[in-house]
Amino acid sequence: MESGIGRRAFIARSVAVSAGAVLGAGVPSGRAGAAPVAATGCESMPRGRIKAMEISRLLLGGNLLTHFTHSRDLKYVYSLTRQYNTPEKIVETLGVAESQGINTVVIHSDGEKNIEPLKRYRKEVGGKIQWIICPTADLATPDFQEQVSRLLDAGTEAIYLWGVKCDKAVKDGRPELIAEAVDIVQAHGVPCGVGAHDIEVVRYCEAKAVPADFYIKTFHHHKYPTAPRPDEITGPNSEIPGYWCKDPEELAGFMAKVEKPWIAFKVMAAGAIPPPSAFKYAFENGADFVLAGMFDFEVAQDARTARGIVAAVSGRSRPWRA
Image 1 (cartoon, rainbow, N blue to C red):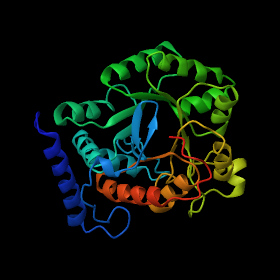
Image 2 (image 1 turned 60 degrees about the vertical axis):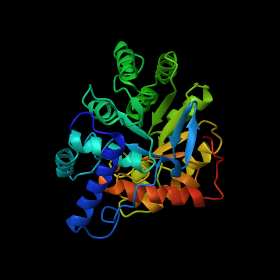
Image 3 (image 1 turned 120 degrees about the vertical axis):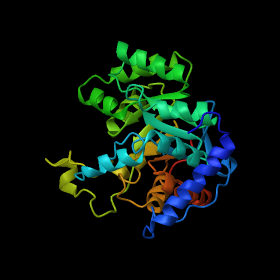
Image 4 (image 1 turned 90 degrees about the horizontal axis):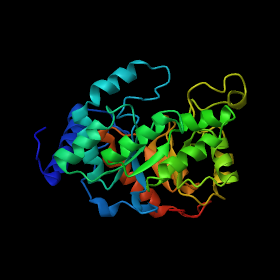
């Protein structure tokens, strides 16, 4: 891509390219095959606020962009995603997302390779999409502090603690590392979130009044063919892939009393639940934001789905906290 291309022209071209790719491929109807809607502008996507950041209710997830697809035992999908989501395609996807009113991307760092397309989108295109990024180093270590500094120097607007590390800290009996890491980030004057797959991470933070600014917590229903059976949730197979929210009803009940903003992720159980069902469940049951992994040809339809669901949602079990 040529340096200096105008942001408006690039985004318009990105939307057109994505639409052409889908319509010309003869993909069957469904999530990936539906024709994207026209770009509608950032103002049409509902937003919430975390500290000083105004954030779209639908956020662009980073796992597909970093080729970490959670495709269960379908190992070829990792390679397929890597072949499709090249650095150029990632830049293009950011443009499509921004054109649909998605103004924030959430991604984990892995050295500099995951950050480079984001930097390129800003520098070469003039894109304005915000970054919420998690360091992957062990919590509250010198490496963690160094990664935080590098991410902020690169332009990150908010940091969150990687759920993998927070889960481990609680499991290993060292949950105090979470509070120490939050303090490290907030000393830089930026919002800090706590990520988690395990509800015990959020329980600890709430019980100890850890001053996190938001949570990023897995949340999805179990109404899909490969959802876990009761014995898989607590028995010897409880660690098998296929779900990331062991007890969604328990989580919804607990989060109803939590006053911090909540970004729900893995809402589609890594592709097992269609977006309309996943988004509706998350928003109706208390999530303030939905973080969704999307290929470029899925963004427009998913954005349209999110806009419609947020506009129609009623009877939430939890007040909007952002």
